[in-house]
Length: 254
Length: 351
Image (cartoon, rainbow over all chains, first blue to last red; front, side, top):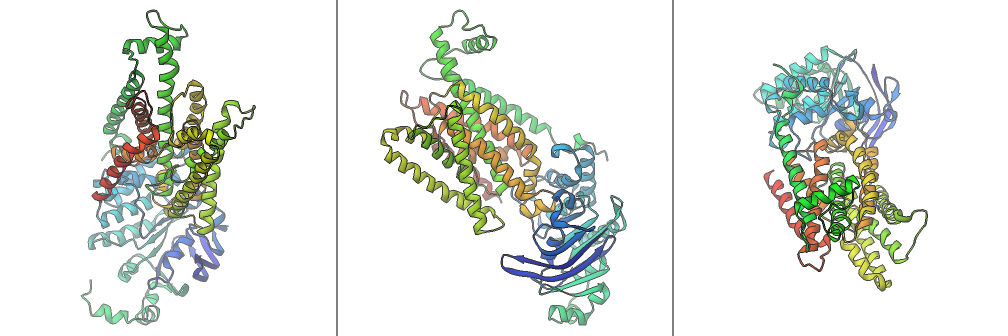
C-alpha cells in the first residue's frame, strides 16, 4: 500500500499554502516532516489524510482520497492533530473509545467488546489507564497529549500521522514515545506494514523515530531523503535560515 | 489485569442518576395534572387513566365533569408540554454538539422563528388545504423552519466556504431577528389577529388536546430514533470538524442530516405551541453537568429534563396568576435565562 501525491496544491481561503507537491510514501516507512513554522507541514499532513480540500492528486492505494468515504480513509490513515478542540469534557476512556469508531464495523455506531479491549490496550500503552475516568479538562497538557495519542492508536490504521506528538511531554514520556513509535512501526495493521509520518520540531526526537526526512519550506518540498542527510548542519542552515548546529552546540546537550 | 467491559465502564452511578431523574420527572407530570383550580385526588387520577385506557369510561364515583377536565384538558396539555419541551431540548443538545457552540439551538439558528412565521401566515391568511387538515400548521411550521435554517446555511456558506460554526450561529441570530420583524409587521397589518399572533410569539399550551399529541408523538419518536443512531457521530463531531473528518465522520453530511431532523422536531413543536425559548439551551447544559458528555445518555436525558422543565413552566404559567395565563415562553425565559447563565458561567469559571 502506498500514498502517491502528484502535482498537489492546497489553499486556505485565497492563500496558497502548498505548491505543486510531488511525494510518495510506501507502507513500512518512517517519515519525518520538518521545516520552519508556517512552511506548510500541518497542511501537508491534513491533505494527505484527506480532511481538507486540495487540487491535483492524492492517491491512496491508487484511489483518490477525496473520493473515498471518510470511514474508509480513516481505516487507512489515523491523524493526531497538533491541537484539539475540547468542547465537552469527555472522560479519558470515552475519548479513547471514540477512536475505534471507524474500524468498529458495528451497525449504527454501537460499541463492541473488541473495541473496548482495544481501547484499553491503547490506554495502557500510552500510560493513561490510571486516569481513565478523569475528564479531559482536568488533565495537564502532557497527560492530554498522551490521551490523544492513545485515541489515534485506537483508530487502528496502518498509516499513523502525528503532528508534533512530543508537545508537552516530559523527558521520560518523550523517550517512551520514541520507543513506542519504533515498536509500532515494526508491526502490521490489517496485514499492512505500519508507517509513521510525523511532524517534529525536536530534531533529536525526529532522528530517533524516523529514517526518512521530507523538509518543507515555503510550501515546497526542498529535501527528501535519508534523515541523516536531511538534518546535516548545512542542510538545516539552508532550510531554517539559521545556524542550527552552533545553537545546539551552545546548549547543554541531552 | 482483567479487562472486561463491565469493569471499564463506570455505570452504577449513572443508572442511579437516571432512575432518580425519571422518578422526579413522573412526580412533576403528576403534579401538573393534579394542580389547578379543581383538585383531583391521586386515587381518582389513576382511576380515570385506568378507565380511559381500558375503554371502560368514567369509573363509578367520579364526577363526569371532573373526568372531562382531567382527561380532555389537563392530561393532554401536560403531555403536550412535556413532549414539546423534550423535542426542543433534544434538538438543542444536537445543535450544540454539531456546531460546537453552547449558544446553538433551533431558537438561535432561526428554525423557531421561521416556523412561527409559517404558522403565523397560515393563521392570518386563514389558509387551509383540505388534504392536510390537522397537519396544516405543523407542515407550515416545518417547511418555514427548514427554509429559514437553509437560508442561514446558504448565507453562511456564501460568506465562508467551510461553514464555520460561529458564522452559522451569527447568521442564524440575524435571520431570526429579521423573521421576527416580519411577524411583528404581520401582527400590525392584520390587527384582528394581533392578539392570537402575539400569544404565538410567546408560546402557549392552552387548549392543546389529544389530536395534537397524536401528530407530535410519531414525528418525535422517529426523530428521536434517528438522532440516537447518530449519537456517536455527535460525540466525535464535538471534537471539531477536522478531527471528526480524521476519525471517519463526514462532518458536512452529518451536520446537514442532523439539522434537517432537528428542524423537523422544532418546526412541528413550534407550529402547535408558538416560539418557546431557553428550554433548548438550558436543559442540555444541565444534563451535561449531571451525566457527562456522551450523547447516548445526553440525548435521552435532555429529552426528559427539557420535558419536565417545560411541564413545570406550563404549570406555573396557568396557575400563578390564575385565572389569567402567562405566556409559557415568558415563564421559560424568566426562569431559564438566569438559570442558564448560572449553569453556563459556573462551568466556565471552573476551567
